[in-house]
Length: 429
Image (cartoon, rainbow, N blue to C red; front, side):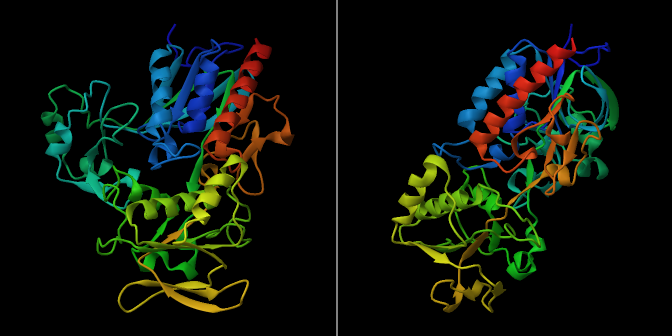
């Protein structure tokens, strides 16, 4: 029997995982490897989520392909796991063992026959902001989501179809993989348990008026810094000023940009301090004469990662400035200046930089997306948690959908959610 979640029954043993980031992938694999059928829904064109966009990640500071490829191989080898990309749920009804989930599928305009040859990209003239690089550069409107995409299949942006290029792209594909006539569609899945792993989105830096994000291309966010440092990023890994391409040798990293602030995100996102320490290391690896200033309230390096903090702190060209900067202004020469007061000696500063990186926090994607009306509720910060903290309704949350976590803790959370989902469907049998 195919794994499609469409077989109706009084007590379905199929588990649905919503979200194809590291937490969703982990939960889906753990559940499938216990012998249950699993459907994994991902809203985007490929799996990997935010982790796939990192340059390196803790604890080993390796490239994301290290861990993701192992999981992708597990997915390919497991007949019980079905991956559906470009899909998101719009409604959940029913109860444990008998949920009906309505799913919206967005057109990809490319089918399973795609061989990733790139002929469609060569044929299009339309350019769109590159979503993988957070819009820091542009990409052809027919594109591979990233060099390590799963599935390894092109996607055609709606802009290319709107520009009337559909027939041209279809003619360019010798494998019959381009389908410009694809339309949005909906279908139902019948499942016994649901794991909500919808992940996070960066807090919008435009909400931070005093930090002038939109006023200078040399003011970027921490997730954009990851792409700037990545070999497949907009600058092929060169950390430069986006405004003019010159080396960024004087860099400021501002902690808690919008976090631990009742006007924005009242909580700590756990990953930001360590992310900025990592960014300081990126800059120092590239430029021996670089200077990096880290503006902080306090540094939070959890668990065994304290040693990494101490290593960065020992670098004489990395300076820790205890201060919450007041505002950023753009000078006449285009360089951004940070203005504020040091917490300890009360000295006022007005310091110019080549590049300023705002360590914005993690906001749950469920804030802007669909949240099921069954089994889960949003807490005070928008994270989704089981109703009344009871896990007996058959719907569970994990990863950053449930609260701020790093990669390793997200995987642990996903494993726990998979176990709960397996128990739920078995109890409903």
